[in-house]
Amino acid sequence: MLAEFLGAVIKKDSRYLLEPVEMNGHMYVMFPRVETINAIAGKQDILSYGIKEKLKFDISVGKCIYQEDFKDGLDVISYAYFEACIVKGEMPENLLWIEEADLDKADFMLGDDIVLMHISKRKKTKEEILESSYKYLYDKKEMRNGKNFCCTEEK
Image 1 (cartoon, one colour):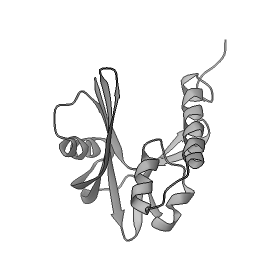
Image 2 (cartoon, one colour):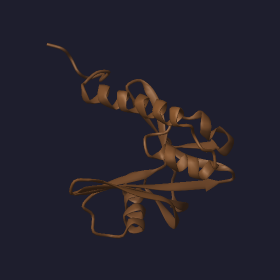
Image 3 (tube, one colour):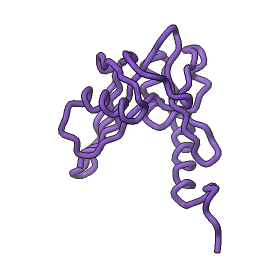
């Protein structure tokens, strides 16, 4: 199986476009991205098509900023982030424009925090990476366990 996480790093006037995600009462942000399983098209094509379907605007995909593949037996998990710009369409209200100087203040989703280091040229310490990763993984685990879901009822 090939799982791909493809992100669009969109910058305009020293601000980056980010997508907020709430998980277990914490707010995270991520670069607009799409996730695919066993896709056969090129990464740039998948990203462009996926963003249009998900967020309803067209992007032009540029060069790759970061790509890394992880193998787990026969499975491969691939992260790839590309420079991109919006060429047409309405911006959804749920997206945020964040000043470049404020990027370090946000909690990024796992994977996106690595791209942030490439963009900002700021290296995180091992402790900082572990702390944010553990926080994210804890919140993800709690969501999977059904905690903090507003619509679940105990019988």
